[in-house]
Image (tube, rainbow, N blue to C red; front, top):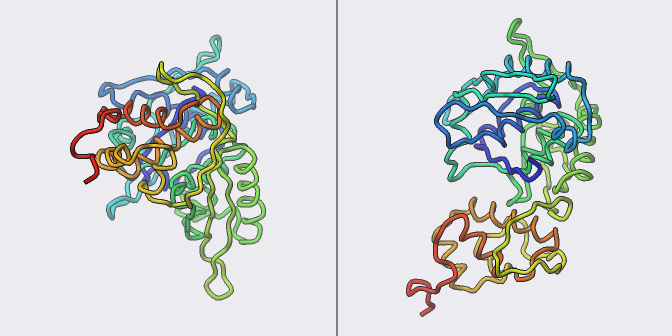
Length: 330
């Protein structure tokens, strides 16, 4: 479970929902461990010991039971294509106290938002989410991962509050509740703490500045830097590649650089770059390069060009090791 990478539609990343930190951990595990290509209903078994190992926190079995109960009541509000949709998150849950294991099932209505995502998706490593301390840190981390390639995220104040659950509407009374109506306290108790948590725990470094209309803060601009050396993922290397430590490679391209600029830095031949750009979209390329950055930080890559080519070939068989007529420079 440590190496799981979660992929979800950007609309889910931007969705508005209320969850505790433990509920977010369970739902993130459910997303990462569900076989999203399976058409039939699927129940996922989650070992509590795995969650505790990755998060570094222990909870009573009663806490897990209550988190499961609350997940049944939670809904995600998704705004997409001019529509405002509401989805339940789970359809069934079970706690095995003797085995210290949970069994969860994703609600079928929300499952399509995690299937066959060719573009408009966010991906992040499950272990990062589990290690973050607060529910606000977890949600902000998911949000900034959507903008790792551009390095900047701008979001309105109220929109941000709704997404992370600081501002929400009580469905029983219709009343809007804001836990931090004073902007200064919101920044100090939520944003500052979340930034510290993310910067010390995950593969991202972030900072923010308020954007004002007159004297009033109406939005925030987050600056995002990907630092993959803080966490590693193991990858199966090609048999031809030896496990010789070479250290972490730092690339000189700026945040938001196009694939045409980024790919040559991974020691690919020009014709290999041409093949990749022809067969992968920008989001797919970004995901593969992100995984390679993480593998680099583990100091296991001896031939960066061969390893990079092999990772793209694993994702899609494009014959990247063979130069063809359509990739020969004229």
